[in-house]
Length: 174
Image (cartoon, rainbow, N blue to C red; front, side, top):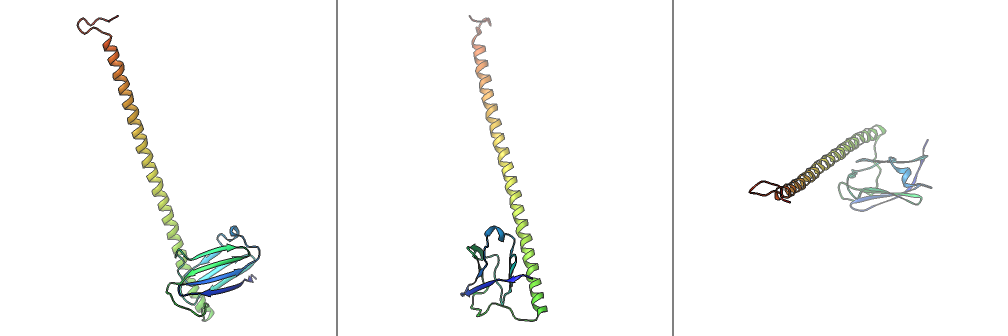
């Protein structure tokens, strides 16, 4: 059974702040161990676990919603969807109600993550295609420049060769 994490919390009109006290926590250990959804937050620091069903919605996609790892602490800054003072942060209800609410929030979070990954892949493909197109343009310009230089060289050589002949007699000049 996971150990509960000791924490402090505070709030203002627009945000909810948690400071989780975890001994020996490192940023590299936290990758993939923080889950933020609209009404549910989970932080897993083996063997400790922090999870809470929030009273109201937060905005996990907001740029100011973040998780920072410091010396022996994890700081969660969660932006509220509707600015107001909550007075408390835990949702109340039966286990079944909270489980259903959490399930819906996790599905929404999973869908957002799928969309984010799809958008990232699309952007990567777009950049790759743009890079290929740009490379083709550069190759074409280089090829045209080389062909231009070759034609200039050919004209010079032809002019030198024709200059070596007498125009009237067609004989080679010495």
